[in-house]
Image 1 (tube, rainbow, N blue to C red):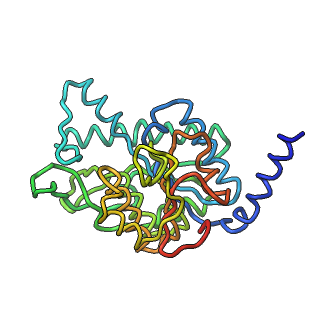
Image 2: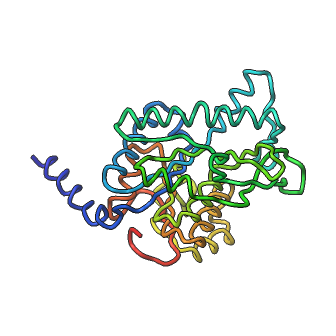
Image 3: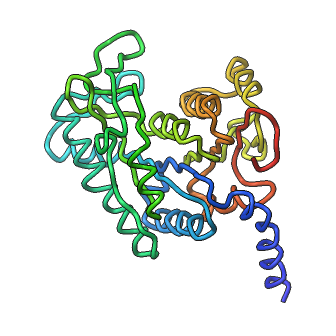
Length: 293
């Protein structure tokens, strides 16, 4: 009986947030172990389906770096990285598009439809949703067809949301030169969330959130303002691979997203726990402090 009562209390705790976020838009950047593990992938898909059923309008932006590397290996092509960015010639760009759009995107759509949720896989090329310019490496080196977003047209995404579909977006875009550009999925999710003025942007990662001590999960910071995040980067508390992710989070806030969340996609039902409970389980970024923004 105690377990049943506790479940009821959890449902009651969620009611204010269900009301608050009804019909609001949320972008989920999907990647990491939550994508590569079959068990975790099914858990995330169930969470996204539940978000939809509870009244949110989810949009998925997905990566797929491991799958791209695996495909390149299969065709005998070496993956080369400079400053964490994949050097992308024309052949690699085509492989990336094939993997992201033709494989991962379609699989996510099938997973959602198996849960009774309408979904459509698109890429940034479709409907001119994303336009890209060539991105330079950290020291100005040429890294090929890696793109930065120069323009977001939300028309197609809006139309899909209006028709009750979950858009599943692959970060591939045309450049002004007509070439295909691969875009970092975190960055793409950030700019799309800003263009749509989403209520929330969620990054599913392999970490618990922002930790004061990287070796101690109990030091996780639950909420952080934009100014505090900048301060923690300057102090070296936010370091390494987390810096670009946090930078994307802060850019989304500046563009009008209400809150950005970094959480561990390896934790079962992390999306539901973060959005519909008071304390959450990750780190939430806001311009100003406001509980469960």
